[in-house]
Image (tube, rainbow, N blue to C red; front, side, top):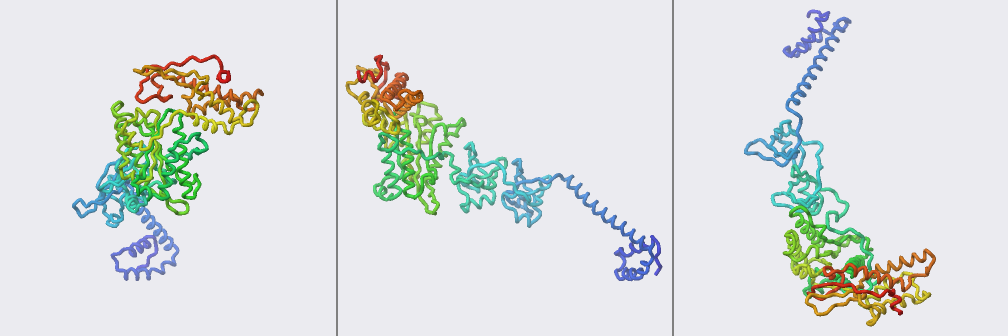
Length: 582
């Protein structure tokens, strides 16, 4: 074989060895015969240079191929992301995927890879070519971001109804993961889910740190520290009645079922402002929690919130139809909570009562036909949900307590619904006044004729004589004339007495006594004169507000009576104490 000595010889050798057209056996023999050339330094140098050149060509070729691929991708456009909905053959043998793009539009894109098509699940995020015609692969980073909404219920066809923060209900398509969680009861109505409104898609559930977080109308305030026998001078009978009802339902409900009694309790508290309706509601609230604590063995602050409050301001909305939805939401929440058994820390489950407070129902339940049609529609919805014969109420332990200052303007149908038991609150009689005064002054420093001994009994006795003596110094505060009436109705100081008025008067007297103590005069305590002056002041402040239009809000008047006029009567120049002992 010809001896190869120079550069051209080295190139010729490499070309021959790398030429696949030559048989492998021939190229092997050529390589063996060329080994002696490696002893020539010049040949070896030229041979290495040729190898460097060949390697550079190979690298250049690879870079060129990569650049060509990048140019091709740029010409095709960037990847597009979308949410996978499902596969559809569209009558062909090729898999097509229905996808939702971020702007809410959808497309049916080809899935060429059979393995990829089989692995896709509803809700997966996928990458497509720039024109959105081909599904290339799953996105490595699935997104679960968007707005939050409340899961309400499953809708036929595999959809789910959700409610947003504006109480608007929408139907969304759930992801496969979310759908399976609903079927396995891991997610239930009321849970917060993550949704994308543009795509009308729900992706996942938002973990909640409170089992009652989805209850919009649930009151989370601290249980009122109002104990009937301690804080209410003359506790109304409704407190004891509700207490007995709750305790019997929680300990031995079969007794009430034997007599055909419902599990729900309807109560209406009526009366003029300041007569103790709100205080009574708070006492009932506290008493229900006392009973729950007694039965469960837990402290009151360890028990869950179980009170709902319905006010006109909480349901009325400026948007048409939303007020009705708020009412439905309110009663749905009440019924849902009443249906759920509560698990105590030790694992024991209890069926706890639910207290529903309908405050100032004259605001939401005025007689229909005399106000805006929106109010009538809202009231009609409330009446439908308040029907005591509905199974959802008959079988659930719910206590309804409505309050009103003006029962005459409340719709009669509503009064019948809520007023299975009615407690009327009015002005204090003699015994009631004594009890309220005892409660209000029990912890205050009192002084009677220079002595602390038995001061409270003596002061309350003199106050009672002043206000309730049949022939006392009270000449009357106002004179009321009724339409078509032949005589006038005189109201005295005692007719204005309510728990709220006495509370204001005792505070006023205490302020006066505290000021004197600070200045060093008469600083031993509250005197009889302080209380008499304060009560007289508060009574006359009320009388100054009276007119024929608002009299019923301050004083009790005969049923069906129409006030024609109110006249304040002139009073002597002497102080109440001077008149008392004149």
